[in-house]
Length: 102
Image (cartoon, rainbow, N blue to C red):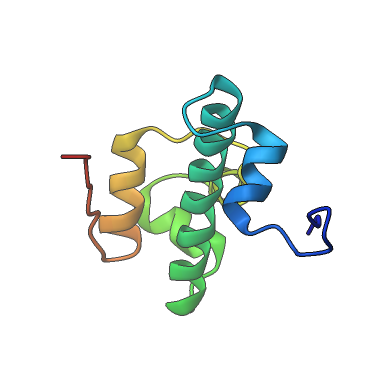
C-alpha cells in the first residue's frame, strides 16, 4: 500500500481515490463495476467449494459447462442475471438477495 508524505499509510478509500479517482468519477465507477464482477465470481467459487462441488459438478447441476463456471469464477466472463440465479438456486441450493439504494 502506498504511503502519505509523512510516512503514514493510506487507508483503502484514499488508495482508491489516488489510483482510480474520487467516487462518482467515470474512472472510479469503471473500477467499481469490475470489482463487483470479481466479487460475484469469488463468492460463487467460495459457495461451490464449501459444498464440496467441482466446477464440473456445479455445471451439470445447472445445465452449463465447466469452462463457463471457470470463466465466471476467474472474472473472465460477464454473466446474465438469469444464469446467475440458476447457478445459485439450482446449482448451489441458495438464493440471491438484491439491495438497491434508498
